[in-house]
Length: 73
Length: 147
Image: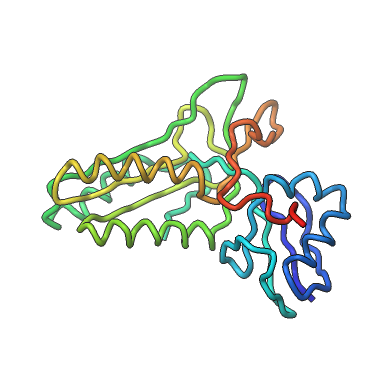
């Protein structure tokens, strides 16, 4: 299982999903109305590395993080 | 590594420490920036969430970039509530000459605003409200909405 965590203001507890690529994760999250509205504005990290393609392969124990819009300072 | 404070930064002590640590390093310039919470919009404080693993990676990238130019970077940020007229962000660049430090400080703070994994909330009547309209989507946002 792949762990998906929702950072900052998304305010949702982590979930475990059955996914072999990031595209699978995208498909699962698009079905969750609580999360779907954040997808357009969120960046994505896999195991704390920023990613820019849905082709990323995932294995059990991997961690996907959603990062909504930021504002430090 | 970014220095994280729970609540406001102790600015005087921090700047003094940074200055003291590097004064014999033969840097001709120390340029610092301190961000202080302004009283506006009825807020009593700002509040921050930080994702430390990625903040440290982002920061180390900048440290390396500056080290290649012979300069040194230090940064501190607050987590949790930071009341008005106290400070949540401080950074300093030490460089052999002033021009590099002044220019890099501007570039660093701009990138910090756009890509450091930190989330800001207004605190009004004890409630934490995400500062959505002041926030910036990070590079690569929207990936999971595609397909």
